[in-house]
Image 1 (cartoon, one colour):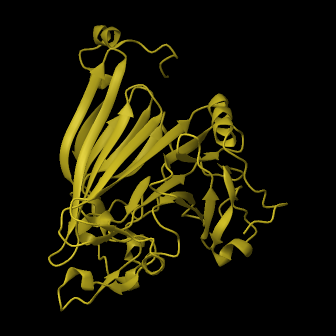
Image 2 (spheres, rainbow, N blue to C red):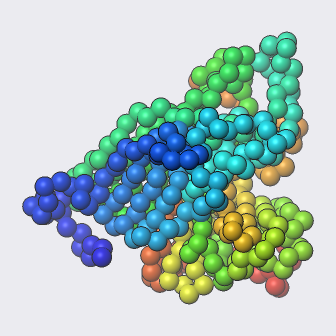
Length: 379
């Protein structure tokens, strides 16, 4: 059961309950079992049936997510492991994969994409001539400091808002801060994330930033369509030519499926935003994602259609898939001086019915079409 299109006023709701938490609110909890023991979290729940879990001790990323009781966030099976269990440099830098779980896992703050060893002489510490990074950086295993929890009710509903701060720092190295704000309207079907990254240190510091937004079943299913306004593919993994699964239509789960990754060349809208969506095969549900095209001009589609891992990643990025060394070499690396900052935002909108899906398709197609993998030749 949900509220009709004409939402009740807050005064009407107050007449019908002694506590507005019956309809929407934020709970602070501590996870208490297994690998998740001790992880602090915030459960945000609105009156339209949107629920998201903010993992305070996992860089203020998003864990489980549901709309009207149906999950839309992906679960890998890793669980929301306590950061004390994470070994950032293990498994040749691939240990990040043991922390990959939930709706949002953020890459950064000084490195994202594949790892390697990079010059560190800009930190002027002779014993540290180079620095080694693993896949998608160190951010995900850093606990946040909770700054604010706000249930800002107003006459027409209001906004649920939480704010956290994550500092990634080391002596004689980076000293970067991420301040993250997550919002849900009391009546609505959208999660909004606003991020500010600034350099608290006094050395110029490299900065990379990636949203690894992960969608799962039932949004991800056989026949689900990936929809975007795009001119082609900038890059694709070798596996995209070997398994018979196109970028725009998902398959059923496949045993032993090898992940497929595309970097799509998106076309920004007149509002300066990129938009992509997953639309269910029956056209009655989906998820649309939008972000600032200038801040994150690159985008990757990650298909992990393996049985038991079945999900799709939608990944806005500050840098090209070729990664940090290529960005240093071609001058596209972002270097933050003391006090400099970068601003990012991400909106995740649930498409609850056929009208929502139709509107989403019209909104994206107003910017442009996308290649048909069965007829069009793309880069």
